[in-house]
Image (cartoon, rainbow, N blue to C red; front, side):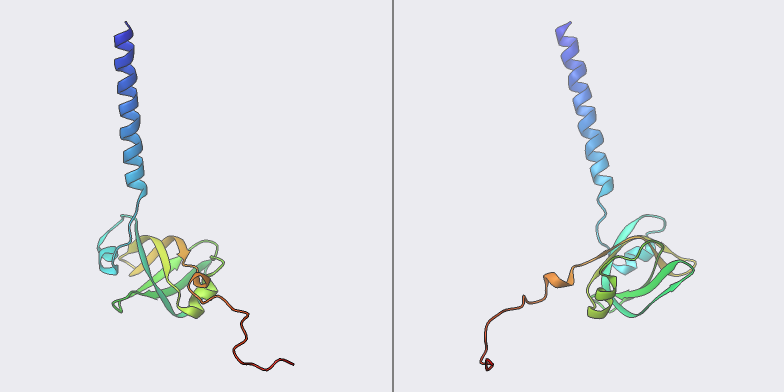
Length: 136
């Protein structure tokens, strides 16, 4: 009887590990090039690029465009609260990641979430050194 309980316990553990691995794999969404995002259909993907042009609000949605490192552009539509650093990202052309699907009918990327890369991480830290300026 003890052996039967051990076998059942082992089966439960293996099933739980398999379920966890599957859930983890489906939760990972890697960044794809714009061309792949356009061909992904209803599959959720992530894209990344530097914003350019103007950002506008209309009908409760945020509209802007991003450009990848190859110069390709993607119009993005986001329904939701504007990320805190989005205005700074637009000014400094900081990279923005968008997760969602490409709408072939409107030719726009419909973002479910946005992630603004922190521009302050890459700026030089201010220093207190005196570089020859006269002191009053």
